[in-house]
Length: 280
Image 1 (cartoon, one colour):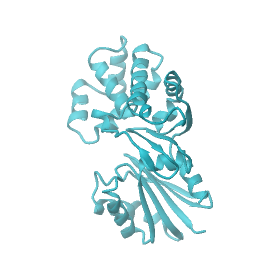
Image 2 (image 1 turned 30 degrees about the horizontal axis):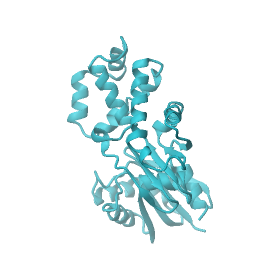
Image 3 (image 1 turned 180 degrees about the vertical axis):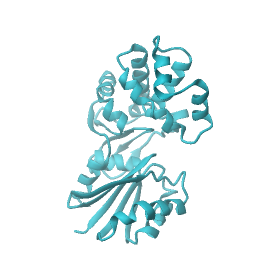
Image 4 (image 1 turned 120 degrees about the vertical axis):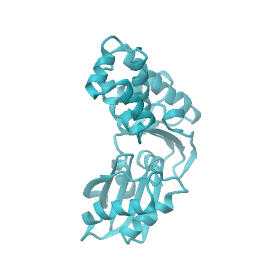
């Protein structure tokens, strides 16, 4: 069996793994790749500069690329950019939600969810997605995500709804003012990344009731507005993403209240993807 290259690309970075027979031979990162924000030329340039040199002298038989923004209309752009940089015959491009389904459920039915900078979810039958509630981004949706947690945090801080002292602590810890926050959210690129970068503050102060209220509301909204539209009575709810991984105790608490069972939780889908391709 030849070596395969698996890529998991998020908003800020891409995790690359060279794998053979279920064993990781090489692992490295590059900048995030998204056909929503980048042209084919820009993606090809990133791969040529930061990926191709790491793969010289390797015999790669196939590339399996998973990424945010890799919707069906955009997969050809990513595939073409990879092919220009890595002349490999087998190149398959999937969305980050398919990455979650492959990593968490494999060839079994289940519910696969992403809770990271953004959020997403689907019901998987072992071969394909059979139902998906649209995530809609942090303005209209993305419940439970780092971006929404951050949004609720700064909104409550600026409207004086946090416990005394917490607003000043937040602003001082991150070097923020109201004007800076407004600029970062409404004028600067990638506001979701900025908002999600504040989520560690929430975890650090989660014993405070005004902070815990934010977490409970966001996770409750995620389950009610998304997961409860799937067959959660018969299937476990599985997660990938940093928010799910680090907030797992609080996530489980809300899930239990709603009669749901939490299954596998990975910080990154890569571990599950390596297992998935080892079983082919």
